[in-house]
Image 1 (spheres, rainbow, N blue to C red):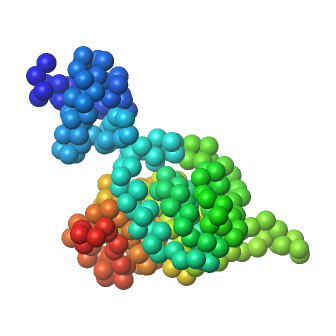
Image 2 (image 1 turned 90 degrees about the vertical axis):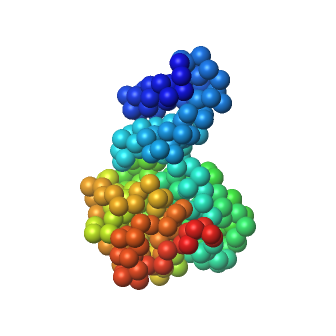
Amino acid sequence: MLPAGRKSELEAIVSTSGHVTVTELAKRFDVSADTIRRDLDALSTEGKVVRTRGGAMSKATTAWPELTVNVRQEVQNEAKETIADLAVGLVSDSSSIIVNAGSTGLAVARRLADLRDLTVATNNVLIPSVIDPACLRELYLLGGRVRIGSQATVGALSLGLSPNGGHISIAADIALISVGAISADRGFSTGDPGEAQMMGSMMERADITALMVDSSKFEKRLFAEVAPLAAADYLITDAPPPAQLADALADAGVQILVPSGDS
């Protein structure tokens, strides 16, 4: 099969299957894994598929808000790693931070190892297993209903019970919040109302709020609104936003953090 014909069929397979691997595609087309990787890279550059570690996903699948966290970790992986590096640059020793659920939050947690005396609160049930204990003063897992797919808790933003029987409210120096979409007219949004409410509460409890959004989510809207643009102090992303969104962020007083050389 000629390359153009193979690429066309590859696009159709990814669209139909939702998620495919390089190995299975190489067997199907009887070509090398490197050939499939080049084809998928080309389709990704053309905006027809989303490359993942070891394969590709359809754009329709990645837009679905209920992807499990292990699948989300494979999507836009390089962008999330870049965003996590920038986010950790906002954190200093002895800070108290809130990190929400999601694969970007996991990437942030893995990069805190060089810091010390941190107080971390999160609804991400996977963070305790990946964060370096040496960086911690305290680690708090926020309670609530557990969403198995996203490995997150959703509920009141408080810690246990105080001696008088009430819940203890929390406050932090900085909140690092990843969301599913950002648009100039609707602000930050996500797919689940419960998560949206919790994200909004996290933002309200921090002195500084940084929203972590990769560029594939620019000018998109999901079902549940989290907060307007003006609720954020920083937008941390992997590439400069398009002009309309950049202007709206500037009007809202949001500082955009992108990799050096992209600003």
